[in-house]
Image (cartoon, rainbow over all chains, first blue to last red):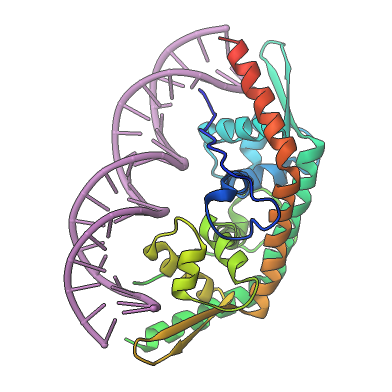
Length: 137
Length: 137
DNA sequence: CGGCATCCCTGGGGATACTG
DNA sequence: CAGTATCCCCAGGGATGCCG
């Protein structure tokens, strides 16, 4: 299971890599990984200490074994998660955030808080929008 | 083109909606929207003032017209983006962030900054990981 | 110019079964 | 328990064409 993706890193384009062009492909790939549906949930789960594989599986509702493994590998590859194997029988594998991962967790947490506290406003906006839609039948 | 998605909002589960269970489906749906690949790039682009449809199209490299329209609708529906139509011929449509959208933009910006400044470390981690992979041939 | 509808295809990701 | 491998399906999303 090779996790690696062809990283055709072009011209870096330092600070102005705001929105345009393909120059910021690397940044995009980082963003894609870190803002991925499962990545966020995993990082959030690992926010409060290490967890075993099966613990994560139970903690993150709806994730398949495949995606858990795959996403953990990617996070490990990017240096966000540390994987520790204890070769007992049956084997025990623990996952925890690295320092880098913890810094990402902070952002993730901020996002979660934002979603939580703005939820009413967003739902209200949705209702308004949908109501106007239905009106134009 | 109905943008709405069936929002089967179950028991809310207020503050402890960290990682587990289906209780935080709404939060997840908000996160899914706001951390979506195109949403992030659009919000980033709108960070510095209003833009026309075609401007966004050009600014965000690789986005298809379909996805631009669709994502903008979703952002509008969630009250993150304001759409203004000027009925001239040809028509002119401007998009801008709402106050809520601006608060999201802040987070997006933080994420971008994080990716930018941790890029070297992440790429290093990737190389290390890949090297170890190749070693185990 | 903006944007909706249709067709169509790829790959993300679920379900299942097997190993160390 | 913690994976890996295989199969397989469907929705995300690109390409194209047509309207106000």
